[in-house]
Image 1 (cartoon, rainbow, N blue to C red):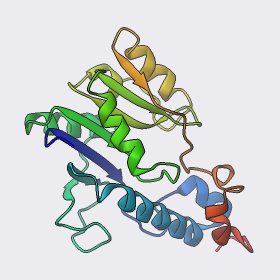
Image 2: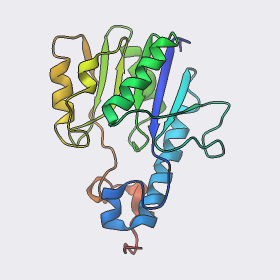
Image 3: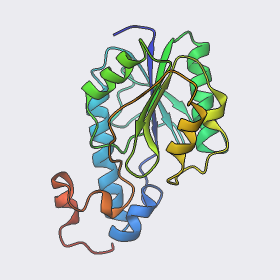
Image 4: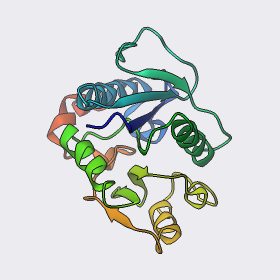
Amino acid sequence: MSKENLLLIFTRNPELGKCKTRLAASVGDKKALAIYKFLLNHTEEITKNLTIKKQLYYSEEIWKDDIWSNDIYDKKLQKGINLGLRMENAFKAGFKQGYKKIIVIGSDMYDLTQKDLENAFTQLDTSDFVVGPAEDGGYYLLGMKAVEHAVFTDKAWGTPTVLKDTLKNLEDKNTTLLQKRNDVDVIEDIKDHPAFQSFLKNNTHE
């Protein structure tokens, strides 16, 4: 894949009581943290072998010693008062560095593969934007070849209107929609998924 491609990975520092809070309301903080670490490991697994530049954006502070290899991931800190501004700042920095195609993902997608990410970059050969719709009304992936300010502003982040409002911003643009996928936010997202059953056995609040 091209050296002009950049993958942005947005992640929360995996700390007890600070991640997956909606999921924690059902399973407790300890299990929510364990599930989040499981998702982080999956994200690392599907991105580490991509032959493109990868920047990892932490929510709170940069951790030099964790599952993310300092040789593979360029570690940075998210900056901005809300998710939209944090993403826009990361995209702007990437384009300023000379990258031509940039995609951002979160780190809570179990239903995502390395092939999916490679395909998303391929779509940007012929499209100006690529969007991966999430089942909860948000999106799990956003890619572009130039910053489109509108997609980062006037959104109720974390609500079911984000995808609809984003696509409205892009309705006159050359945009490719990927397959709908499920990200992990609440217990309903994982309760019937085989990969998560070991976490949900004897489910008690801990």
